Length: 387
Image (tube, rainbow, N blue to C red; front, top):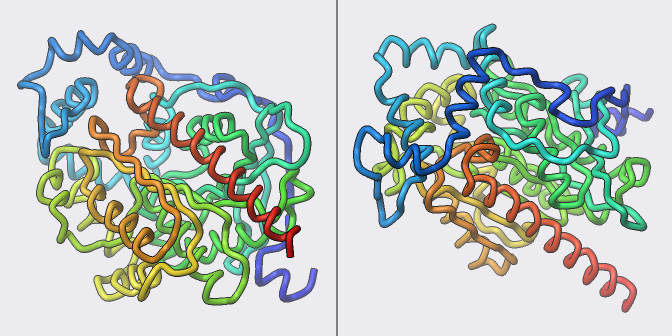
């Protein structure tokens, strides 16, 4: 491998096919987890009848009754429990949070193949998990390089395993899930460096993986969407091909609480202002560095960025900044589809197994990505052939 290839993360150091192709074989709930799952699997009418208060309506949006029940229980926690919960985000108990993400995510159809690998990046070896769906389709499949959320300080490929399998199945695409470095040990821009290295490796190795370098998209939820945007920005700045498409779920584009959604949902809906204030110094070090990170994403305009699907939740502090991103993309001539799911909250991909609207949002957005990236690839090839 040349020094340039090593710097750009083009080397695959290991690739192991996993024994289990179905996540049901990998995740065994504890008794307490089973009780929680059984509770949240009850019919929606049960929750509507057992809420502590009336159905919550904010900004003309009706919160899903299951999510309201969930948030009512969270709001009742003593302050000391909340403080301990925040401390878990960068402690040895972080694995419990990853299990929480997996617990209520929908179990989808088995993959044709699931492989774990290590990509040689500039900051060290980057774990990846590669999902190939069981699709009866000739020729290469599109690829999505995907980055999990977690505020840059927690979560990983195991936590989003089920949601990524759902994406791969519904989008009929190979998905490369990336275990990028986390803060506070590895502050910004470590995650962006890892993300770019894996994207460049995916382009260089697309054919070996069953894809095509011209049909690779990037995507992620929350912090992972931010990483995706940074990758596209960096390719533009370097004069390299950008991803063909971006799939962004409740993505952070601006870290300042100056939006109306911060006022409406800043407390009591999962992701809140308190977590934002807790996360900024861990992930970036200080507010000035966080501002530089936001500038890398927002720049002076969106010209040249890939076509994008922006997905938001109605009860989320990040709803309005993400909507603003969609407006800026559209204003600068970028094809963009904006989807807001008004009954849902931040992190809904991890409720697809128990909340009907979360299942619909996860499924419909992945299917839209399927149609969108294939259509764009078709027209790009036609334009190339016509030259």
